[in-house]
Length: 274
Image (tube, rainbow, N blue to C red):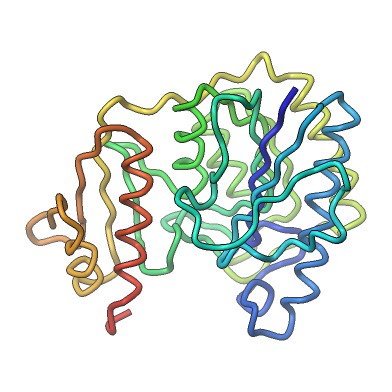
């Protein structure tokens, strides 16, 4: 079995605010260690369950957070920025399953550091389905026929995963108190949970179907203000819906929609009105 693991940071054990996930802040280096340990728990369990190949994609911010020197020696790491497919770079039909670690809820949901790609996004939609990073990434996996077997993060990320993906296994390492506070397991206890849930997810992989995306998805992104929408609208083929901050793009497939989302959110970060 070949397993793909995407590792974000906001959903990692004990991390609750920007001081933990911003590389310029005082808690960040501690957070990198915990993030790497958390990835290792999943990787180790995957190999113990008989996986022959495990590919890990660092999926937070500049995507160079995981400490490669501390990772399980048999894994391979996709690291750095810019990646054409960001959080799902390298994912294709050769994988038997995917696992999302350190994930958080979408912007419009309660959850620790909940957001959708950038803090200027209120909502993202594929046709009429509200998605965040988790849902969008699961759709890309589904395009390749790859099921998302497990999602690890806070309780709200788990809830979002369960609503989107029937029979998905979840690993809740912290419970939301507010957007910047949580009741968290210790790293040691979380590690035990992650190993157990990874084993369970791989044993139950036959019960999880890929999240199949629509053939011609309509991407919609609702921004926090009109200035951000104007920047996103600079991408050819987009339109701003009247009297809203929603920018739409008709994509030929989910891969094009995903890259359109990346371009639109990057453009929106250029506004001075954030």
